[in-house]
Length: 427
Image 1: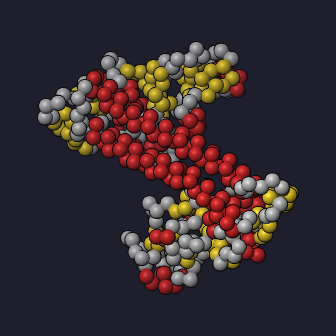
Image 2: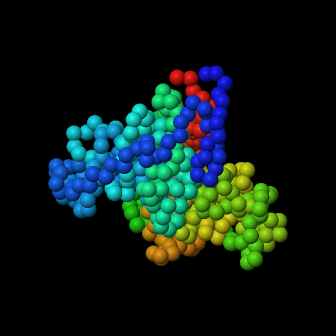
Image 3: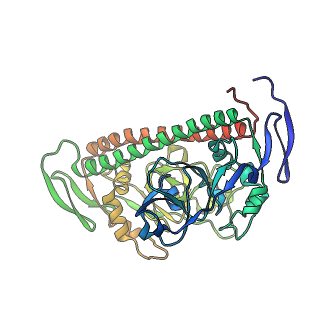
């Protein structure tokens, strides 16, 4: 396309530049909010119910029997964009292209938006997710409390929106939809790989590799069959257990990165550490709690709040301080740390952890109870072979998760550039 010339327009309190070829209209000019309210009992026996929980569970409407739906709902037209007027920051916009023979209805917390004239609803499905739109005063501060903020209809209808030429709207939506599809496909691969790992763990951690003879053993509250040559031992007989340490009174985290990382339960993820939001200590704080560290040879386990998150720290974080809401299993004998972390993460290990956890409002797993967890123990060589087989699947999952993060960054950049006209698309 030839070099783009821009014009300055007002969106809320801000002035932004958009391409001169783009128009500006209010949401009320672009969309009709269709509110055809119906009593579900007046419809067929089964309907497609578009609800916010259904969206969160997988972006597919739920088939519901009308007798189970009490309150009145809105009819969902065949081609519409469902706009969530409640807590818009959760981005539960639902682009509907209906081909179902059953009627579609939606929660009254949605507005069915019907385009007035030539608009691409997919374009606006993406535009409504931008920071520029969600931070607009008429959208972000419409009514109610911060946790249950509702967009006011009359305020929404006055919001000015950019209107690119229709072919450009379609091209932008097509590109962003392609990235979305790649993200969805990657999610499916990750989920499939995790299911594969779960099945492999159950198989390898109870049947081992190449065994024909088995025996029944007690593993906490449940019995299981394991190879005849394996032993069953308690963690306390094979290793030491020690808790982490809270920050001393009057101490706080360092403002930036230091040589002293501090690991919290919120940093525990998928058997390792999510390093994106790590906290760090000042040297003075570290000196007071320096004995409460964890190495890459230990296994961590969360013991308060969220119980039973298990894993290992990478070598780059060996020596980091550990929160008081977690413990480390260390000084292990006759058991491989990778194997132990895998076992404690599998269903048999998690069932034992649950059975040893006390408290309902503030559940806790005492250090002495960790020592009581029973572990089926193969010879060390077999432990390492089992861990190696499972690490292949772990590597695949990590690769796909890293790829997904790159796709999300790509989408974020494309949305910022394309939906504001900073970069133009040839059509």
